[in-house]
Length: 175
Image 1 (cartoon, rainbow, N blue to C red):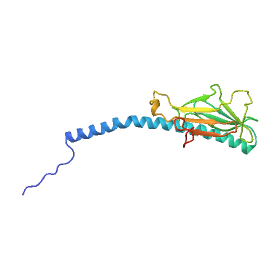
Image 2: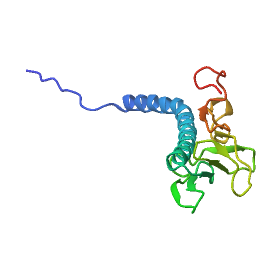
Image 3: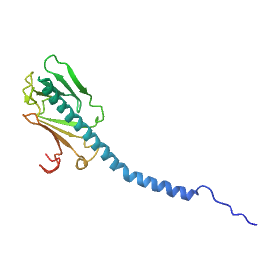
Image 4: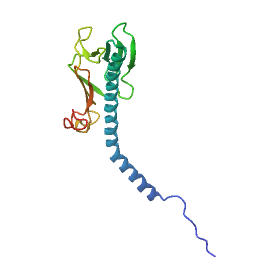
């Protein structure tokens, strides 16, 4: 009576083919993964700045006093009361969006002050008030064409809007 021997494991050739296929799949997926991570940094940074601006406006209305939103390094920010300077909330730029870069319009501005009605008023230190923030990542991380940049606009009436500058205006998130 002959017994059949069952083969266990894999041969060296089968193992080599499996590793080669895994390496090819990994090589294909790494660039798209880098794009996904960079765009996630943009979205996180933009959302953090938008949330901070909305917080400052809501606090100004709720407290019926002037509240200052100050943009710190990159996507970091601090919301303070104008009278007394008490800090309402702060966010460091390193929380989820350390690779994101922010371009401010006008370039020297770092603050926005909201009054008790939620409107933008002149800063108490006579500095410029920013009206637009453009959030992106350096082109050394991903090509500019792959980046899904975001823009935040602040109107004189206090409206804060997060939009996509590459989309058609008035359609979806278009600016």
